[in-house]
Length: 150
Image (tube, rainbow, N blue to C red):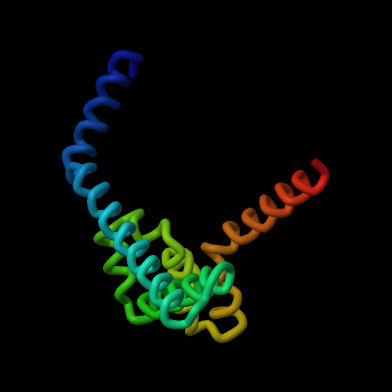
C-alpha cells in the first residue's frame, strides 16, 4: 500500500468507527455533574449547619463529624447500589466530593468479598483509592517538610 492509499484507508476506517459512536452531549453532561456535585456539597453544608446548631460543634470537630457522615453515606449508598446509578447519571459530579472517595474504597471491597476477608475484601479495598492515599500522604509529607525547613 502506498502512503496516500494508507491515509485514505485510515480515514475511511476512522469514519466507519465514528459512525457507531453516539454523539457526546458535553453541555448536558457538565450540567448534570454540576447539579449532582453541587447537591452533594449542599447536603454537606446542611449537615454542617445542623451539627453546629444542634450539637455545638466547631472547628476541627465540626469538619470531622461532617466528613465522617458524608463518608458513611457514600459507603452506604454504594453498598445499596444507589451510588452507581448516581454516578452513571452525574459522571464526575459524583466522583469529586468525599463521597466519591468512599465509593472508590467500598466498590472493590464489595466486588471481591467472595474471595474472602483477607484476599478479597481487605486486599482489594484500596485497589482504586490506594494510589490516591499513597500519593496524597507523600505529597503532604513533602509539603510539610518544605514548610518546616522554610
